[in-house]
Amino acid sequence: MMEIYDDTLPAFGVRQMTADDIPAVIDLQKRAFPGQTPWRAEQLQRHLEIFPEGQLVVVDMNGSVLGSSSSLLIDWDDYAEEANWSSITAHGTFETHNPQGKTLYGADMGVAPEARRMGVGSAMYEARKTLVGERGLKRMLTGGRIPGYCRVAGEMTAKEYVAEVVASRRHDPALSFQLANRLAVLDVVPGYMTDTESCGYATVLEWLNPEYASSVLLKASVSHAALEKEVADSMRGSRRPRRVRIAAIQYLMRPITSFEDFVSQVEFFVRSAKEYKAHFVLFPEFFTMQLLSYINESAPAMAVRRLASMVHQYEELFQRLAEETGMYIVGGTHPIIQKGKVFNAAHLFTPNGQVFRQKKVHLTPWESGPYQLSRGNRLYVYHTDFGNIAILICYDVEFPEAARVVCEAGAEILFVPSCTDGREGFFRVRYCAQARAIENQVYVAVTGTVGNLPLVPNMAANYGQAAILTPSDYFFARDGIAAEGTINQEQMIVADVDLDLLDEQRVNGSVIPLQDLIKDAYDGVIHYADYKGQKHKTSADAEEILEGTPAD
Image 1 (tube, rainbow, N blue to C red):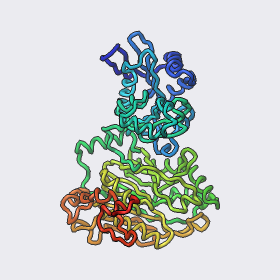
Image 2: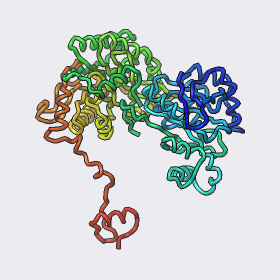
Image 3: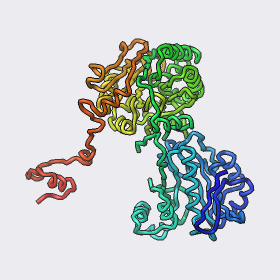
Image 4: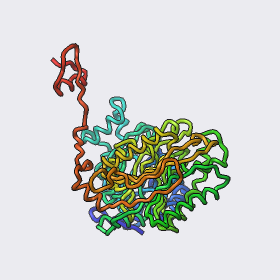
């Protein structure tokens, strides 16, 4: 049982809550938040069953409860656009707790009135931070009341009030305390909870774990102790293989009659990759749409949702194959449903049986339209035995910023599962993938679907080719192509990439674009204009025009 003691003031300790503490916690909440509904006994009992480590109490030397704190684990990607207490906690039931989540969400914290200003709240925040560190989590996140806002609500907006508190021009009983405990304000949201003192507003606050180095945010995260050990080992300098072998599958989309037919086709390629001693295997985007050839659903949105209902069969298949072969498998993409939303998600299957998902961030009109898919909000870098990798799904690779941010975070190989139905779409992805390899001095493995599925929405025709691409320099393949397949034929391509060579080229290359990016050159764009016949040629003149004020 975790215990943290504070010796600076009257002695108290922080420990995990037990069932015996429940009556005292309810009494504390009634006194700490008069007029608000406290937790019910059955709710607290359920919290203990779901995530006992996250339920804390502060007790004095006599065993009296001075404070309580309730929390759960979530994947913040599920809530980034709907941050309210009720949806995140499932109306206080904590049924949304995700054991693989990398965010500790603080659902509640209360301090007895007689124990305020004694350091009780700070001790609970430190205990949460300790828990974040022990479990290798990315962050602690919570929603904060702003009880001082009600007094000035007629004078300013909630965001203006929070900005004043952050700038230390105002004091708020809750927010000022949270800022003192090194939490940062991410947003101010209306309707967070029923709280008249805050006029219904709340802050979304974050504390990032400084020891966490296994994911990168665009606006998530690698979980599991085994993978975290791999990250720690790599940071300590453990030796990785110099050469890494990649197999990319040009997958033939042909009608099948059962899931077993799909299994047979997948197993053939995985076994073949194993025979070639591959470390990574890459399947295409949407290749599991092949399953719809026997499901026979013509409505695009419904077809994708029926396919998403098969996610467990899909994941079990690839988990088994990754464990049996000892390879990392990027299992293309398969739709998943979370909180009623459907996402196009790439899946990374590891040899130790773990599964990680990368949701597609940029959606095509067909995906956001007929398929009614939702976009992801984050990109991840995965640290493996064979280098640091990231996954950009098809259209994602057409955005330079996506590749840049993961490469700056350490990605050495980008995997790009794609699905295109025509030559022009294919070359958009292919040319952009080649550009990303050059811009970021990174290896890029891309593959797509081939063949046709006449009765499956938007999958009637496929145009694809697999390729393993390199930076363009003397060290690498003359044309920047380590291997490529024959367009529109079912096959597997295999190539080795040299990570030491990549390291050397990132330092001693003919050009080093990953290092040479001049970020401050992109802080703003100066517009030159002819204002009422007067030509403005200086940046100062242009800036005045942009601001709507004519230059003299």
